[in-house]
Image (cartoon, rainbow, N blue to C red; front, side, top):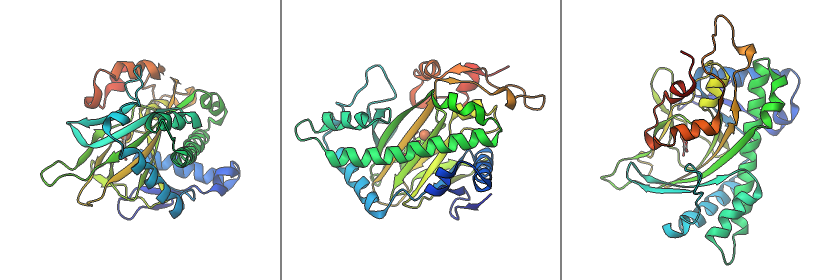
Length: 316
Ligand SMILES: O=C(O)CCC(=O)C(=O)O
Ligand SMILES: [Fe+2]
């Protein structure tokens, strides 16, 4: 494997424009293997990219401040009545520091919709352009890394069909500084239910991932890096070779507000390729419809059981 983050021991994979656009050759092939090994061992890795300049990082913070400084009633206008996991989320007694605005899809219109709801009179062009650009960079990473995982398992021929079934939800998140007598837990430990997640955090660390040893480590990120995490979908698809990353957010004593952005990619129909099933690796999860799974767990909310995918479609 390449190198590891000194603070956390999590693998760091460099995915600059050059390798992203290569898509063949020995450098590409060894990168694909590096990515697969990182996921099999850790369920996640840090992506070192060349997408976020200091200037762009400052614009992201400004966009978040514009949004989250609005009154709660205004932010609540962002609602998707039929989609319990989208819309505005905040003031939850279990995670009082967390507040977030969800969006559906990665089209410019998704961001524009939020801006129209938040600033109905004057709009906010800078907000739209900044968040859209961040979203697209992260969507690119989710596509390229998925392709790498397929290639590394020798099933690249299945990628295109899977790609057409991918869809994305995104979330802008803010974690306020805890009061002295308050919990510093920003988000309770969980695994993501979707296929894969790409996360960006601006300036303030706080994301913690659990290693196989059980140890929680802070995914210390540089301003130009992202975290790529396996969700339950990739765990089922890979026939359990990759485990979904168990993660949480802790604010600690940094004394700074934290902003993060997530692109959650899901595959509508998740099915383990037959190439990944053999005598040594018997099928672990039956093929399932992601929307049905979401309906199944929607009743459990923040308390979702980490083994719920097993209960939903596990074999045995
Ligand atoms: O804010 C973060 O870094 C993590 C967010 C997260 O894990 C989630 O929304 O599922
Ligand atoms: Fe998560």
